[in-house]
Image 1 (cartoon, rainbow, N blue to C red):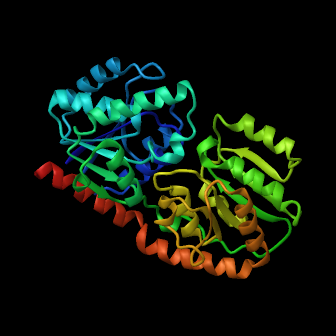
Image 2: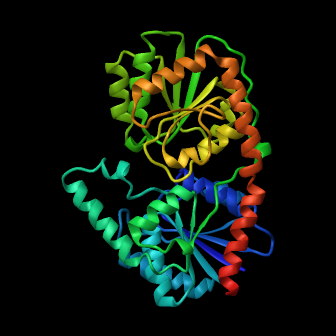
Image 3: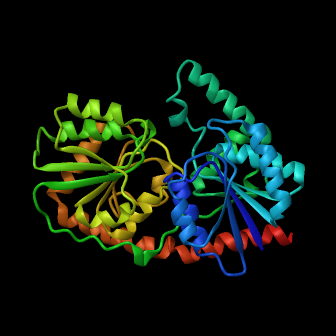
Length: 370
């Protein structure tokens, strides 16, 4: 079976990294070609080192859908894949049109809660008009893929409602990770108490809530620090908030780390305040590390963790409750570590990349032979 995977760019994002991890573990009977459209080559070397064939179509930034569709049609003719899998908005729209014209079976993916209420609330003015236009194009073409693979049940339900996709066409396959590659966290309690968040710097990631919670926590406990590992366009606003809250030196933005999961052993707790997600690979990695976790109560997170059993959970966008959970972990660290150990045990059974890759490959093969 030959699979062509299309994606917007090779930036160091959760979807891109998950694709890399996934195709590394496909069987030898499956040939994979990854095709990306727009200039961003951060993960190019990692893909090439894994022996994955890459095709870069060099489409001008932003959209230029007509040029991209024309280029992808040429690829479909020259590579002649048995099946195409697309991820992220621009690649989805381009692949739907090109595959329809070339009569190639397409598998769509749901990796983001693109039209949920939390995301919709982030748009104002002209942004709302753009949001509506984006949704309209997505919905009009959503019937083209043969099936969809969703990162979570909650994501499948949300997108099914938003895009009018029959839920019988949606297969839920979680993100997976290589268990042996993630070191086990067991850091003794020391001062300062070290929190970490691994996230791209976007508004939707809830990082302003984390900084606000840090300001509240600082009123009761000043022996702590927070590293927010990642990069993105929201950096300047976060830096300004940190300065205004007087948290310089306590809340740090060290930028992107190539193997962020390897750093978890240097921290006491992992914080994940996101407003909406698909299914977070960073959260899966935190579970596999056994580090105590504090996360927002969005449905996608609650498919991974169980409140007060494998994680402390707070109401999304509630900085007061987040600060309370952080203080609880500091004051009840041994109990929090036990939660982390339970999270690791559960993650091992659910998110082993070998099992995930097998599920994914079998699903694609069923489409090809049908």
